[in-house]
Amino acid sequence: MIPPGVTFVVPVHNGERWLDEVLKAILAQRDGRPFEVIAVDDNSTDGSPRILAARAAAGDMRVLRAAKRGAAAAMNQGIREAAQPIICLVDQDVVLKPGWLAAILEALKAGPGTATVGAVQGYFVTDPGAPLVARVAGMDLEQRYAAIGEGTTNHVCTGNSAYRAEALHKAGLFDESFGYGYDNDMSYRLMHAGYALRFCPGAKSVHRWRETLRGYLVQQYGQGYGRLDIVWKHPGWVAGDAVSPSLMMAHAPLMLMALGAGIAALALAAAGAPWHPAAWAGGAILAGLALERLVAGVRAAIRHRDAAGLLFPPLHLLRDAAWALAIVVWTARRLKGAGRHPSHSMGRG
Image (tube, rainbow, N blue to C red; front, top):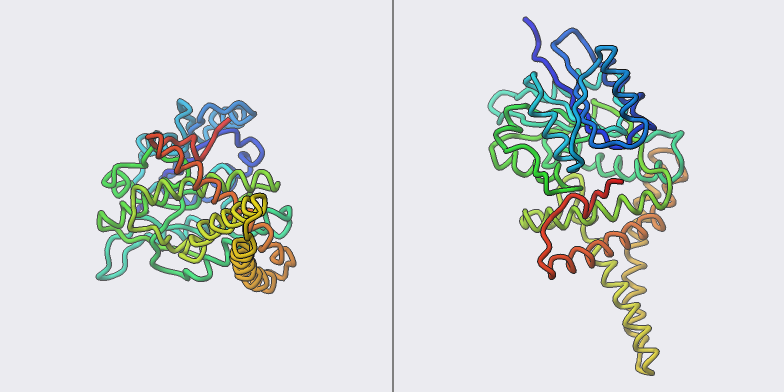
């Protein structure tokens, strides 16, 4: 009996740095089943088209050209062209570990008496040799993964995942008006359509996180902005989900309150009015946020035997500030009547 075939869809936009490694790892997953790889080049201006052309000429994959409408649109283009019943979505900066496909397909099977599994997310492992900022980002996510455990989840991230093609088409494919957040939206719609979602720690991959502080904060601003778009469309998920739990979601509004209190204290001091209460309030909020992140960072440092975890407080307070800025910008756009657009959260050069 021939096992079900798979189509890998890889959206690409200026992913030259890691792209060849990513494609090699995907091709190494071949196990005799029907297997195809579709890369969708979303108007790359770096060396990505050259890498893709070489792979296509070797017969390893097909390359489609997108119209620079964002990652969700690029994925949808690949999904529509997919010939196999299972679609694996892998980002251009995600390197699959050996055995990833076998593990994730096993998790995609529905158990007796359970709902059909529509999507499964794999596990991003932290690269101990990555630069400091990238290691902290990876350790933070792994700590949240530990709270999920193996089995049912309510959020499947697209960069490291497998979907039933029928489930994606039934849900209506990805919402192309989203930048960050299209995977949350799809997860919630799949569950609404009656499908189960699973998390598979055995399907491991390495995510090449942003390596500089600036790159990290730009990405975090986008993710915070995308989360607001999600809450606007799905208000029932305002408290977060398995991957971004309620405590994490509370950080951004609390940071905004702390920054507002600090600004108020400065204004009051300039006017000669009592400013200490506002300053103390802002300082207390910041101290609470920092303490929560310190506890999490110490746990991560022990878990990974890496002192980089002790950078959780400063790095994540900066993340909170980026999310707070996203709240301000998102609110201003909404008040002006602006609609949702992928470039608002996931700018593409």
